[in-house]
Length: 184
Image 1 (cartoon, helix red, strand yellow):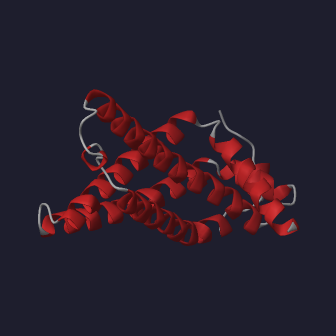
Image 2 (tube, rainbow, N blue to C red):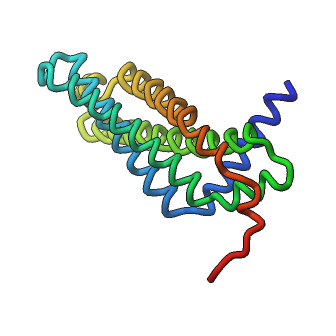
């Protein structure tokens, strides 16, 4: 139980760290939202038999794009905050603690992107239910629950893969980096 509290505390600290970098965080949240939305939409088309095999190819393309973008995001987080990670290592944080904070940042960004997509889909369904009250409920939804849930699970797995792949980059951050003189 104590381990869970420590892990969530470290993830919370990671989220607080990333909220200081508003531009990068917002850009990747929007990118993740678009990827999650498009993947869910084309997964819905694939389940409905619309667009034929192209829908499945587009789903695979979006999943690969999300893996590449999550690796880019993790790489940017490590490189741009190298001094922060080194400082944390100087004051006693382990590599595991730092990677837990990084995981919190990456998973929070992906979760927030998923939350934005779900919120937009709810508003879409509510708007069309209000404007066209005589339609059936299935006509008012753009994306069903199953494609949205499958996409969210896939995106979380992709984020975990990127965290595992960036772990070596965290190992290479040395505490001495924090002690070097900053040149203006």
